[in-house]
Image 1 (cartoon, rainbow, N blue to C red):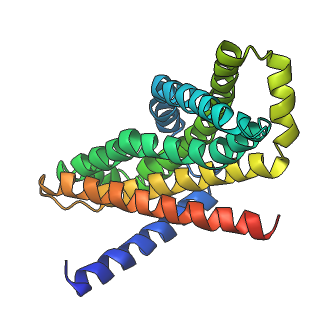
Image 2: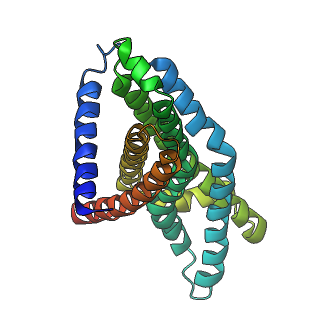
Image 3: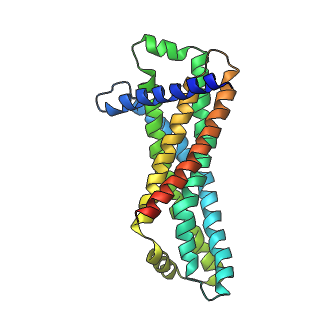
Length: 254
């Protein structure tokens, strides 16, 4: 890609963001934002991803407790395993792993769907009816992805804690009340806020990049997979960078 193409793509993304923000600011009076599209996006991004998220969360929570207990018990520091569970899972892994799942499922789906609509000129047809494609197709999906992302991360954390307790119960015969007392003793409000902020930002990143690359497809079907790949790569890169920035900000202002 030439430098001119990169500049054009970058300026196009900021114009897309400006149009999206403009539509979102008038959300209450915006008749183009579809509640049905939002609901379908929440169901696809959130509800249909629950089995995979449940498996990941149970495995991660259980393995951290199992490995952490075996390692730290040798040094008489078993309580630190709960600090690891909070720091690693609640602060980092829950958001990152959930975001990767959402990118793989919803990000690719949004980019492909909008790209195919562009190729079939369905977006042009929507505009001909006086309906804003940004409001109807983009803002609705952004809201759906962000809501689903936040709920999935909270769900991931809950299931990871349950998985940690199950492994503690099986291998260390630890009661649920004792496990939760140790866990809650190290959990702080900043951990919860950080997790919610990250999940919201990740949801915005995934939906915005996916929608932009999908709606930027020309009228050639060969562009659809190319744009989908770009959406995935740019989303993952932006998620990692934003995660480091948010973590640093919470560390500085804690």
